[in-house]
Image (cartoon, rainbow over all chains, first blue to last red; front, side, top):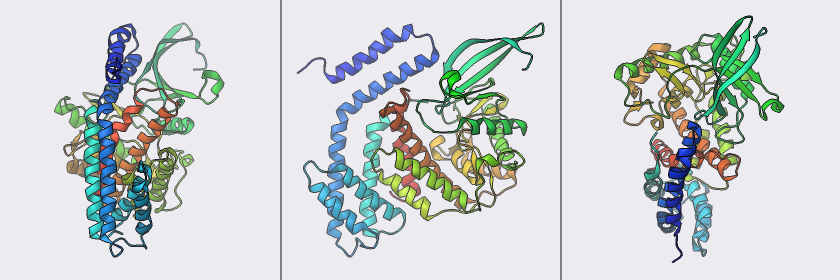
Length: 150
Length: 321
């Protein structure tokens, strides 16, 4: 393994700013910027480890959600609302290697919009809401811990 | 100051806050006749990048109009649009004393201070909304053509910025929010001056209440429910407290007392949805400017961390969870 690891580098740079740079800074604005940089390095170190798990979980969940929506059949996914086209694009995107995450999110945006506007039937809405709930929980877990205190 | 001479800028230092402009505090010393005067000042210079793209002349004129009307604002003193003077346009205001916070009113403050600030906060909003924009010389803000326009204009404006600054990404909840706003516009009952960022964190205060409302760069003409909706968003104060100032329903009742106007819940809800979407877009603008190197402000990447709370509030509002 190459040393220092990325994590060791990031925490080392936090120490450099705190111990070598901060004592030399006299302006409160510059000190604030340095503290923000330290906070962001800490966030980067935390995310570095959990981001791959987050990404994998997101892609897996999107795939599973679109597969479930597809299983509902044409009766539930209306052509009029444009959801059938979105589902077809999502299915193609999730079959790619690696999956086209951005295209899947674009399709999910169409489904979320249909739910918000009341254009999706209950079975579709249940799957979409389930995905959004899990997505929010993952985002909260990934980013929430790094929130600076005001 | 036509007879002033020997101007000296003393103790110039950059300060945090007002992220849409670079903000500097200094004391100006000058001689007039045989006397020497000193005055605390704030200079706001256009940024290279940042949270908002706004017109400093417009902001200056709004603050000047508010000052003339007797609202609690810093006295605006000087506007320089010629970028050759200090690289970018800037303006100078009197520097009022007082403290400010980042978001919700600080929980550690005494109850008496909180009550005075809450009362002033809604009192100033009532005074702002009672002003006639024509008499205030603020037709420059572009009067809406009819009562349907404010909601449509604001939703379209922030949707346009979202399209510009989303860097090719689709945020499903934000897409849904803008579609919902477009499909459910509300109609205002009158056109008032809207601060555009009226919230805890945008005022200076002390133990006697609010000293000055700050950050007028998003001011425009629109629906009175817009500022109330923004100020009472969950984002600025959790635990049922609007802006950390007072319990939300009591906040609405005090607004009704101060203004003599009823809180229209449908319009309030619309502007709270718009507020969450707008705040998310402001975050995306800051992130984009940081990523594309228009700003090196180390606070900008933190904006990413604010998105989950905004998305969660939007998802709850739009029944997406």
